[in-house]
Image 1 (cartoon, rainbow, N blue to C red):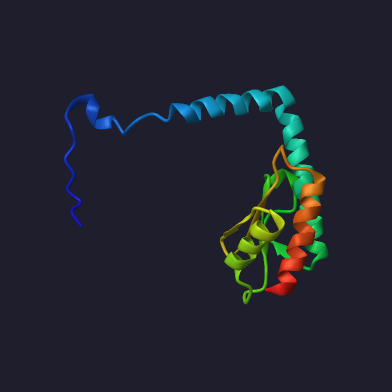
Image 2: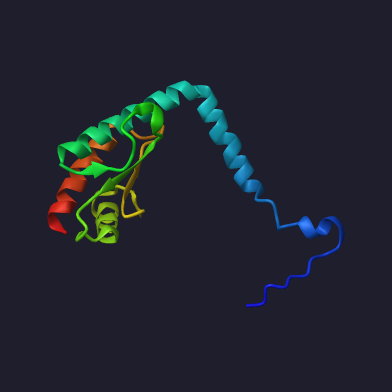
Length: 136
């Protein structure tokens, strides 16, 4: 691998491509929504859903590697499952059969709760996870 790079002279050497202006438009719209609702309201909503999710996970005798103290966690949790379980298969079944979208990350299942999620979404995710874990 050739690690010797040659760069343009002057300011052009710092140019890294086209700015994604469409992303900026999306960011502006997202910030308008968050600001209209209020960041504290969003945080309270997300933390409430994550708490519901953690309690439901623990009811299934699963563990999380996410801090349990609300002040130490965000809107994501990582759930550990038995090592013999195929995480990618679990994610695939949850998506295809139950329309629950999560990811397999760091040896666990990563769940996220956001402003657009509801308590019903969390219940669906929990009941779907229980069914899928019983079948894989």
